Image (cartoon, rainbow over all chains, first blue to last red; front, top):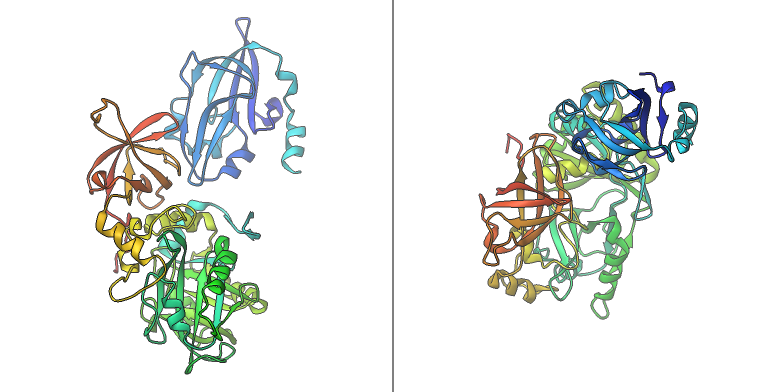
Amino acid sequence: MKPEELKFAASHEWAYLADSDGKQIATIGISAHAVEALSDVVYMELPEVGADVNAGASFGEVESVKATSDLFSPVTGKVVEVNTTLPDNLEVLGTDPYGEGWIIKVEVTSEGSISDLLDFTAYEALCNE
Amino acid sequence: MVEFAGWSMPVQYASIVAEHHHTRTKLGLFDVSHMGRLFFNGSNVDQFLDSLSTRRIAGVEAGKVRYSLICNDDGKILDDVLIYHLAAGGSFAAGENDGDSFYMMVCNASNREKIVQWLVDHLPKDSNIKVDDRTEATAMIAVQGPEANAIVARISSVDPETLAYYTGTVCSVEGANSIVSRTGYTGEDGCEIILASNVAAAVWRKLHDAAELIGGGATGLAARDTLRLEAAMPLYGHELNEEINAAQTDLRFAINSKGRSFAGRDAIVSALVEKTLPVRVGVELEGRRPAREGCNILSAEPTNQEVQEVVGHLTSGTLSPTLGVPIAMGYIRPQFAAVGTELLIDIRGKSVAAKVVELPFYKRSDR
């Protein structure tokens, strides 16, 4: 996916929104900027399929050598898929953050927060502040 | 760059892991100018410093550098420091000191004001000793790793390789009057250079150019933290603080209590004899997830209350870049401190199996 097709949270997660059988599915990951800032990611704690996530609330954790950071969901909904191969292939976060580096897919149940997300240009501007 | 104790600190230049590895395999350059550098002028400085140090300082010959704890009267740790006794030379002259040598102390940045005050408050009556805080007038560069001494030797009048471990000397580095000591905080061989701050940038650049040519380079304080953790060196504010008695630290080499009196001595000796306080240990965790400071340590087996009991807590933890496993240090009840003891670490609500291991986690092969 191209970053231009994604929506971004100020907390550096991205969401790709697509319709599937009438449901809105958000694929969620973390931005290239976040991966670079974290540097040396060594572990990820991911939710289970079926877990509820809330926009702005933690859905998992990413551990770098230096520190633990929460992963915040850009949308509200239910986890329908988890990239279970990711914890063993953390390097794809750096090499393909908007593709193979996806973290979870969420069936969106409330669209309220989506309008708060930024497009790529606005997100980049935020990162360059 | 990150703010710490009023200093703008280089936490990482690029990748922490890459900086960690180049220090272990080639060399890392560290700007540690934030560390406090206190010089002493006056008579009987050695006896004065001895009276406040867990380590014997009086009578130590010139050239030696000693790691010591500074404790309050309750034996609790105010700081961990290096005390240098050096033959005078160049601008590091003896001044009003006895003989032709002088004393210097390197303390932690966050404790500098407290330690200066502690020292001044404990000067003997009628003493002519002056504590000269030259932290801002000087800078400090640590050069660490198997290639460190050879690189420094190119621009120093004294080859650090000729200095014994934990000794130092006044010499000339790139023409600048400097103190070079074979010391460090990474578990690697190497040295540390103290020199006037206005010449430090030029020396840094020279060392940096040479380091990059052989695959080394600038190394931030985050990598310094993973390096010192693998080497099981305590960090003030984590393993050491004013709640911890020096006896708990497993730094027996830094406590000489025989035939000496120093601030905190009686409380430290009592704690060493009683052995009831939690002690510092190293633990290795299963899996890949690093545990962090503040995580509780639980007993692996349920105790008599039929629950896993909190028996300690972690003070530092990371995924060891060298060993590839999560390592941590912490304080634990003495009955759980034996090497091999199985434990659980509570990482944000999840219990991870761990065991007590021998320290240091990493020891370089040539020692």
